[in-house]
Length: 174
Image (cartoon, rainbow, N blue to C red):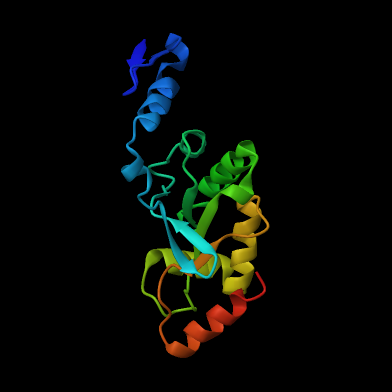
């Protein structure tokens, strides 16, 4: 496969490396002005969240390893989408070898017992009723195989402001 760069240089690739070569050649052809387009947004002083993050659920899994190999840095994984998915994401992060270069977002539910009428919250509270959001967050970190995440959100709103405050306070130690 031959790809011609805008400078006229030819890039050759073996068939097995064709996709990576095409992606690299395409990236090299991006005009300087387009290269200046921001890829992240500062959400807190010194904290930059990528505009594009990869998610996925166990019924429609994503290829997290391919995402990271192609240069993706943002992973968005809520705990409620399944332990199996969190483990796959953790495996991809470990295989990547540079978790400090990634931006990992996760979410813990705010399902105080009996407050949200959803089957998921009913099941979750029956399994984990004695766990606060902070403990749920710790479980999530272990499943992902990381010591920290860059952004932890409440996946669903709490019923009251008091529950919301209590839930956020339980996340402080993470």
